[in-house]
Length: 95
Picture 1 (tube, rainbow, N blue to C red):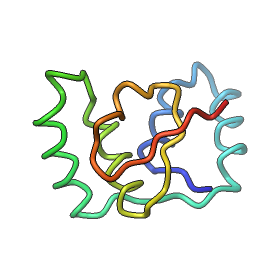
Picture 2 (picture 1 turned 90 degrees about the vertical axis):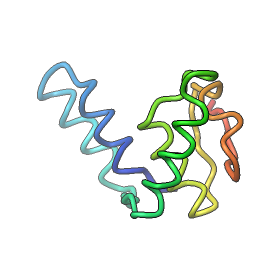
Picture 3 (picture 1 turned 60 degrees about the vertical axis):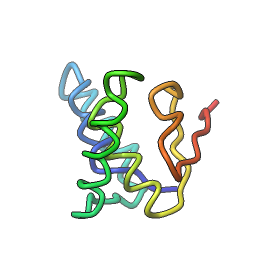
Picture 4 (picture 1 turned 120 degrees about the horizontal axis):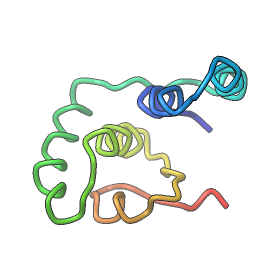
């Protein structure tokens, strides 16, 4: 299991205080962080342009999907709707 640098940033952005931030950092510290590569950015831009109006997919979702597609990893999310239809991507609910 890995976590995208984009996902780490999104989780940190959702923290309401330092205690929550420390909890997120401790929880994620055991996971390797996947960084965005130049080809990921281009793929994400293409998908965003194609799908943001029709499906409401966000650019950060596209960046996460790009790295997952490159690594042939599934994206585990409760927000399946935004990820469905992105080529080369497997989407799974985490629970």
